[in-house]
Length: 95
Image (cartoon, rainbow, N blue to C red):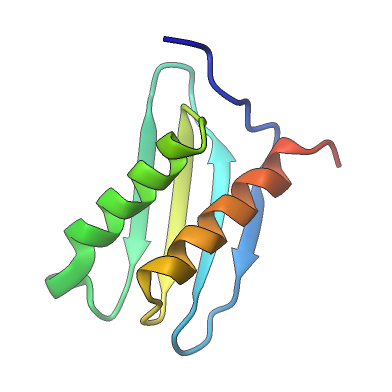
């Protein structure tokens, strides 16, 4: 398996508004994999799904060893995907 894309710095995407999410990504320790921290009003019902979605999205676009922090305010899956990918792409660019 290849090295994967490299996250260079912390980056964010999204907003803390109704039906959206604020996603922050940061480089993780080498070999740590994808770590997801989530705060959400729907944590009880959809927390596992949202965490899995985040981890799968990070892996699908080719990143490894990333910490993802999500402050969800009821975002749909496609919004979460877009926010995660946007944050990853921002974090992969030099400042």
